[in-house]
Amino acid sequence: MDRTTMDLWVGLFVAAGIVALIGLAMKVGNLTSDHLGDTYTVSAHFDDIGGLKPRAPIKSAGVVVGRVDSIQFDSKRYDAVVKLKIDKSYKFPKDTFASINTSGLLGEQYVTLEAGGDTEMLEEDGKGKIEHTQPALVLEKLIGQFVSSKAEGDSSTPQNTMEDAQ
Amino acid sequence: MLKRTTETLRGIGHRFINRIWRLGTAARFFWRILRRSTDKPMRLIKLTVHEMYATGVLSLVIILVSALFVGMVLGLQGYNTLQRYGSADAVGVLVALSLVRELGPVVTALLFAGRAGTAITAEIGLMKTTEQLSAMEMMAVNPIARVIAPRFWAGVISMPLLAAMFSMVGVLGGYLVAVPLLGIDAGSFWSQMQTSVDFRVDIVNGVIKSFVFGVACTIIALFEGYDAPPTAEGVSRATTRTVVNSSLAVLGLDFALTSFMISV
Image (cartoon, rainbow over all chains, first blue to last red; front, side):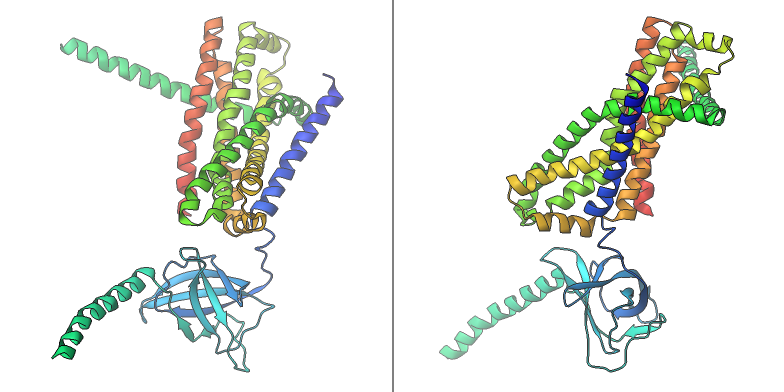
């Protein structure tokens, strides 16, 4: 094989490899969808974060507005401090309500922000704090509550009928 | 009794020292390649392009066909299991993550060792057997700079490119099975994949892995060829050792790299 055809093949090979890499980044990975511009950080305290992980999406009205930056345990309040990175183009009022939800029954967990009616906005200097939060729904707790309430209901029914009969 | 025990122990010790000795020779060989790579940069680039044709372009067919089938099988198997839990849509995530993180770099490296590594070992071993390498030295041409270094760089550059193509074609294979054949929605296939596959954590780490595997596979193939006893049997044994050692090195390195990457 002569030199020029070989060069051509190698050139095609390298180009195809780079295209595959870009394809992976754009089509398979989240390089395009993940692009948050400038962000600001606010913190929120949760009693229970469930299975929330760093980099989980923050959604408002279903639209991704940011990502969870870090999760730490607050040893003074004995709860979790979640730092939320929110895109600078989205501003939220001070009385915004944050909750942790699950997509689908067993899917990944994300933070939902619901805007309140305050006229003042959350500070963008990193000191912003979301006061109203709702902890994650933990499936085991929910089932536990359901089972115990069911058990109470069952034991009370025969008693009632007995009382009625008397 | 005592004599037999000492004899056995001596045998073990001898083999152990030999292994370490060989490892040291290989490390010095690696260092010599790196040092000789700066000799004549223009010639090295030209020769590397030439070698990339042999290691990269000619490996394309087996890599791409394997990738397509690996992706399709992953799609079928993933669908079968995920569908029981009502999350068949996540099959794209399964295919993409397993390809980008593990199968892409590892399977590419194993195929590369079998396809290109053996060719390199046999070629260099035969060059040594027919005294072409010594002849080069006679003509004041350094065989490391002229023969070994271009093959090394060709392998190191080709591997990440091949692994990226493997992952991409594998994902397309998974798509072919999941969307037209099993009827999963194309939108949720891609969008779930994009929310779960992270560029930095998954794709870049996959590229780092395949780069490390490229260095390991190529250096093993080159060293086995360069170190082969100059006989027909010696070359054939060296070729076998290339495949065995490269595969073991790739799998061991994969575990080590993954444990580092997961903990970060």
